[in-house]
Length: 174
Image (cartoon, rainbow, N blue to C red):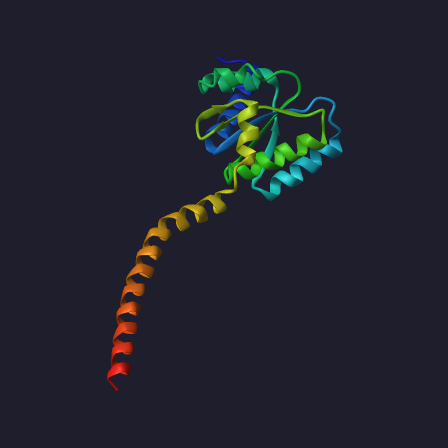
């Protein structure tokens, strides 16, 4: 029979594992010496981009990360640590985090997991420099449409030239 403490710990580990497994992007945030008002400000700004902040004990976080085979990231869980996870646009979440960290020096991103890939803190900064998903999709769409639009303009130009020549010939004969 399991002890109550073991059952409680296993439940907490399962909650962290579910949060990591069910979200597209997870970032590990170190927030030592950060005021409660600043954390509330971070929570509000992350809520607007569809992300959430969850605080966990380091032992629980390390257990969950090791069980999910994220050993590199589990080594970065030191001090006061929080998880930031969201299922929407990961670049928007990273932009909010980087902007918040620039304002608050007592806070740093230690790494992250995006679609199963482990990220270093430098990768999170690089991710925040990327355009949003919608902008990337519109760039892709314009790149796909561009050859077709160019072909259509070439075809139309040829027919316009032929019509122009025929019009000039008819004007000369009249």
